[in-house]
Length: 330
Ligand SMILES: O=C(O)CCC(=O)C(=O)O
Ligand SMILES: [Fe+2]
Image 1 (cartoon, helix red, strand yellow):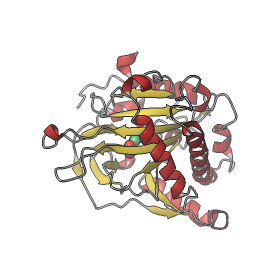
Image 2 (image 1 turned 90 degrees about the horizontal axis):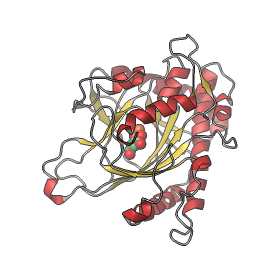
Image 3 (image 1 turned 60 degrees about the vertical axis):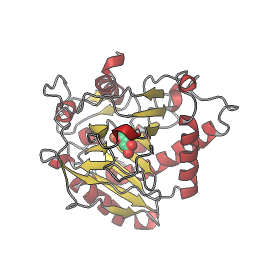
């Protein structure tokens, strides 16, 4: 664990203290919220989302409108992508949330690289970063459709938070305008490497280090049987008790990110989460997950109504967080 906290943002100072193993608890549950019949049930759903967001900061959505066939298709494409040779993927190096990296993300909580590779799609920044159609037929179209479907779920949830915060219903949809060239929401394909046999009984718990997300809201897809995700609610971060988030392919896991925490004056708290290594006897193969980060457009000004946080554009905010995560590449 890092003992010094050489970071300026308050979020990063907190994060640098979250690298310990902590303990696991089953005492709290991840709230499950049904989005079916959304327009008619909007008020009821808004109350449920708000309670989950305020109490725990993470929740799962069922009947969210993204067909499970589409989720499976996205995962199948993701597996095909990561199966490409390293040298091929290295042609699309990560820069500003677009492109591929392997073992490059060092979370401030752990100081060691996450045991994963990832590929990020931030639409306005993708020139030269997609595989050729001949090499991976249908990849780009599948991922762009999935990005759009995920954006729609994210904006539905954020529209409920907007109303509770006293903003216009479409406040966040405008701040995440997908047609603007300042758009910076990101679809991230993740692949945690399979655990080699010779270290299976020597693992520490870190596969992906503890962190809060930098964005407004995360939409996360997991695969049945590929667990490991754990969360620690923001308001309980001192206790460092972690709860497992069930990996179910029909659910979307959501968590509040730091942009929304600032925008809501800390009424909505971002939550720490991590991916722990499998324990002896658990599945030791690769873990695939897909995240969609609702990140306000670069020119959106994140203000804190009480003045607790200085106003900052979402572009500057994200750049600062990225710098702290990819220090070695600066
Ligand atoms: O892979 C996961 O389940 C979590 C990924 C994550 O937290 C992230 O990329 O921010
Ligand atoms: Fe995350």
